[in-house]
Length: 302
Image 1: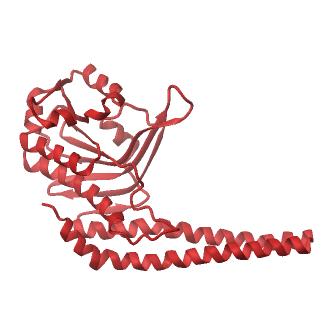
Image 2 (image 1 turned 90 degrees about the horizontal axis):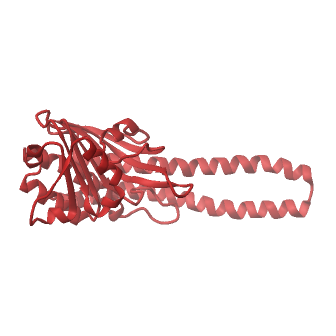
Image 3 (image 1 turned 60 degrees about the vertical axis):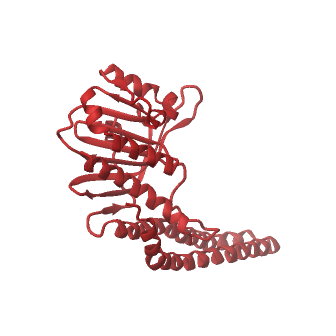
């Protein structure tokens, strides 16, 4: 069920007032920053006019302390903005079942266990960890940025940037199924070689839009058709077309892993422009809701 109209009402009554409160804090910081720039320019001109080294040295101490305090207040504003808004979004989705930790994430080992991305993940950074239940299914998720060293250039290339979820599904589904975006198949050759080396085969559903959007690999034919019912296939194509984002899924012996790409830093606050925006909040809500709904739909259709 699409809860966006309901979420819009919740935003107007609950999230918007909190954004206004945070906006007042942002404006105070911005004015303080502007005044500080003029103040420091005045101090530097005064020091240049006096041209006494000892006086200049003594004045640098309070100036350095002031700059440190100002930077601390800005970092504190940035660090508290996102957790406050996410807590309110989670209250709308589920009143009791979710636990949120802003500076925590799924481990690199948990990410690699999905087998979706064939990488050693030398650069692995996560935040905004959420843990809870969807019906009877336990899940964990977080935002991730994963990179690896380029074989051609001395730089780090993106492997994945977005939201990653892992959940305990149904122990009756023993085997492996991988669902990958067709458009990015050229970047997943190592993953695909790994699947096929372990006995997985590619499966297609003739005459369906699903074939244009996704590639499917599995080591058990009957498991593919049990998991990917016509309703589930239609659901995945719908979510991809609606969001415009790529979806990666793996089922591994009763565990489900879902990765959804997100190129932007969602809900990261601005300092030099307003953060009072429904669109800013809506995008994070829809990403979160889509992940949870995919798991719910898989569970409901099985």
